[in-house]
Length: 583
Image (cartoon, rainbow, N blue to C red; front, side):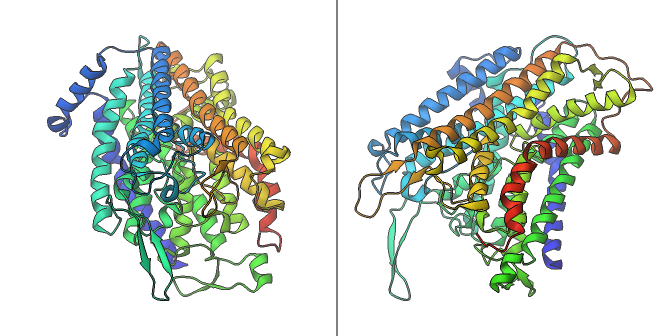
């Protein structure tokens, strides 16, 4: 296991090194300071403003900002849904794929517009190149940009000394796309191509293998979508097996790069936050809280996957790990990555809202499979999605400040601004809304006849599959326990196909409401804080950049996650991990 721990330590060291560099750059971009790329992209930026008739210097209050977010997302939804339903008539479709069913199209559209990228389908057998690029890849950019724009607006609300303006959504959206996402994704795509990730428009090809069997190989513009899929914490794979596919993730270097892309912006935004509020210690405190929980998640899942479970022992399973030791769980893991990098990828993708996978989640041990659920049970504030992770964590910061204020007998304050009843009510609603929606959806999936049609397994495994499906969709994650389905591929020679409509609609609705209700809540909090005056710091002021506050913040996150999801975890993966049943 030592080799695996060294690999994990190197990865975390690289992440820490990126944080101030990328975080400082984003702070300059959104503070209006000059950046080198403006010489090239400045004219493009101004052309976009002219085309959409927006005056970037015209500020918006929280209601106008929220209205712009909603209207843009509605337009994105309509455009993507139209592309999918017209797929059979659109170009760049060498396999002649017809339009997906209406219910699957609804679920997929909701998924990509909300930055979830949950997939009830195999990309290479369902979507044309046009749909993949013009539809899905474009949403990978703009849905991530929406998350960044919202968190920047929230930061402005916190630091504002007077007035109600949170900035201009259209300017933030444009700058997030042009100056942050596009340049990094472009460079990352070139690196991926250099390592063997494919990027072409070739028709699919039949190849005869060494034993005489014929394989049908799918191709396509993969590297360009893979880069933004990871960078924007989107996660939807070009291929059905996602980042376990060599055409998406060819070797250990690309695996390392893809994991780093997933965490880079969510982690760096903590530094951006510190710079924009004028106190870098505040940003590092949030990074420290997220890092402690992330490292704990990695340690648990790697330890669990490196040791046999009671079921494996009873079945005589004794896997060989990459470092020569025995006893680990290599089931449905890529040999070129091994247990350590599979476990690390598992943690990386579920502490964020990415959902990309390089191994089969459902084949992890019971305890190893509980880790991604626990990660998502924290409302994905352990780094979280691009933008959404930080503004989600700020909800917990407000709750921690309130509880800390009660402990010391003072009116709660955060960065000099009093936290009053309105902010506490909104923060509480924002923190509890996701668990409420997810548990309701899981109950409907388990207890109704329509929901049971999506189940493949019974017992703890079937419950885990259902719980994971709605936790993943509710947290804008997108990873899955593969047994739960909302779409059945047609049999060979059968032109018809059908979706399991209940799962498609319930999942799509869950993704939409759990994405946008918290956005409205955090913008409302930002609007409330924007107009408040800053009170002078006193001897009794609770410091929010100290190790003590970091511990308090972690405690609040873990406590709320445990109170809401621990009973459900006991019924699924924990029970399975303690039994002698493999599935």
